Image (cartoon, rainbow over all chains, first blue to last red; front, side):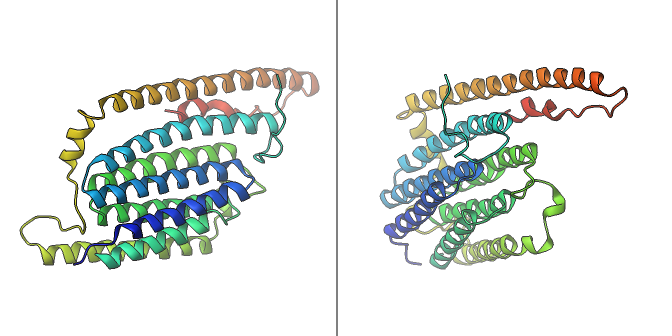
Length: 102
Length: 204
């Protein structure tokens, strides 16, 4: 069984990252924005893992662990903020919350 | 194993494309779970079984549960919220087909691995990095990173707790206003709903 060329993993990670970026730019629902950010973080982790498998070093997997911690903390605070936003504006549209106050 | 890699990459791309094009948030969450499972299978074929297990547990388990809690708490009706009556049986077809492809790949990988190496060694393609290597490097070279990640997680716990706390106080004040309003308006109404009871439970 021949091993996979390492740039195939990088191409898959790039496609998934671009899909997440497109979702972040196109959608106006803030839940979808958070999901797109999760997709992009996951694609970055996939790039790290495939590079680490290319060199046979554990550094890529360690970077994925850090990305995991960042994603978990980001999504917990982000969803709390989404609840606040919905409570204040009664909508999830990010265009409605375009004005800063204070 | 190459076939497993390419097939799961295709499944991941299709599921991700479905995530960003669905109207309802619940449907895209289903596709997002499928996407995470496919990426976990990619990690397995790339020789990182520990990270594959962690992806399933943390991403497809914990983070998705947080999203589902948030959508259920918000209960958005126009854009397809969390009520189960809006989930038609036809909505299950796409994620089910994609995850069945993943199941077939997983069974194929297990069977081919059992045939190739009967010595008990897992046979992932590429250079496999064992979990004990990862742990040894994590707690020697990257020790400061582990400490920083723990500080980050602690600060996010405090932040989420603070936001949930403020939310409940506001809702309680609003509920008291509602009580006063109802007492002045009608004599005997239905007991007012308490939608904000569960918010502090969510952020744990």
